[in-house]
Length: 157
Image (tube, rainbow, N blue to C red; front, side):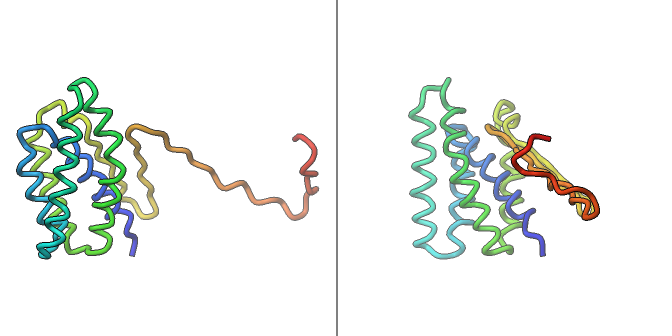
């Protein structure tokens, strides 16, 4: 089973989560993600609330002009956390997707522009996207022709 879509879901949910910090949508995001991350365990939910509060405090304490930079810095940890959540417990994927979709519609327009949706549906297809960074693809080198000359690695081509 290809779990790549679960990681993508975690990443897109994290983007919505960090965008919700320091907005009117935050309380709904906080309670929804705390419940999902807690998975019915009060101690886990308390730990999630503590982490979510730290996220919001860091964004809120930044000057408004620097909030997107703070969000970009905080995003990778939340991408990992939410991707791990849905990979470890795929049953949570529907809840994460529903919360993400609900919050996207409630976010201010400026925050909605920060969210990226990428889908590949064809068999063997690959979808790639990046925010605040680069994608570097390393193509597979062509197979050497066994009947042809073997290039000397010390010589330029």
